[in-house]
Image 1 (cartoon, one colour):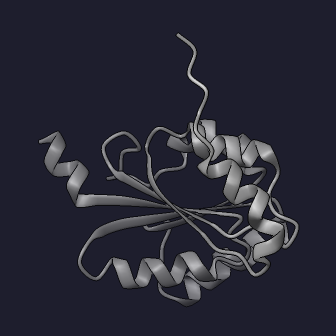
Image 2: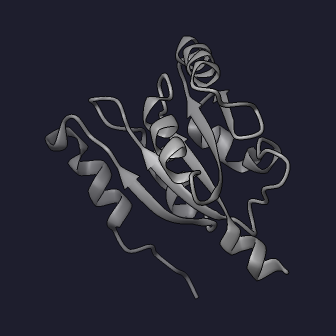
Length: 147
């Protein structure tokens, strides 16, 4: 039963989601054939208010689309408390979308993404590739494992 559940559901984690446009577009396209929900996180509270309004305008409910105001690195450890009913952080596929501000994201966000064992994929979106290069390198760098 667990394997079936894991294959049937996906959690889209929209990191630095702003007003939610990327996550909502992906969610609408992906949910046609899949059980999927979106959890958006952004540090700017007014952007989260707009993301929630956009979700309602696009016919999305709290059961498929939730937004959290706060630092991504602070939200990651409590993510399981924000998952809608019918989804499980440990049994669902987790796909991250990271759309950082022009200056990039804090190293704690990068570390949070790297430490999230349940995240199977991370899509990095950038309007300023030169500024994002440090984040990309840090995301791809091998992890130090002590014995």
